[in-house]
Image (cartoon, rainbow, N blue to C red; front, side, top):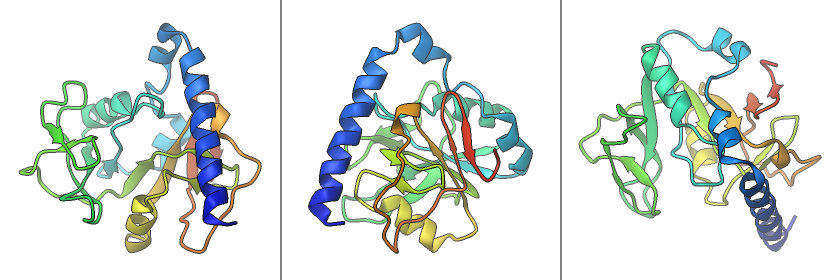
Length: 193
């Protein structure tokens, strides 16, 4: 598929996700993604470092997962960029609900402060625009997660998405890294389902 086609697909997926989230009542949205599904918890080691992302308004939210894993003794990590052209790294996140340990990052997203300890997730929850039941994913287009996962092949990658983001198929390229599972408000797809 040509880059323009992927760009159009991303635009369409963003619009569908935004419409879906905007239609959810605030009370309903507040009840979703509060606790990881039991089948996932069964395969996450007690000493796993959990990588998450700080969700934008229309992405599947992660703050309650971060709080849950922190309360259960896990180290929490968020992406950190030293600059727009720097590779994605991960640093420790200690305040999931208050976010007092975050600062503005180069992409307009909050990230761990410069003095936060570097850590490497063993389980990584990733954002996405679309996914398939086979674990294929299309992200924002920067390739940050694909490159990081390619450099860390032992990491368990789990997508978080709204049900409307399920696609029958996606254009997959050699560098696209598959997900082991995808969590939506109604279902768990993939290896741990």
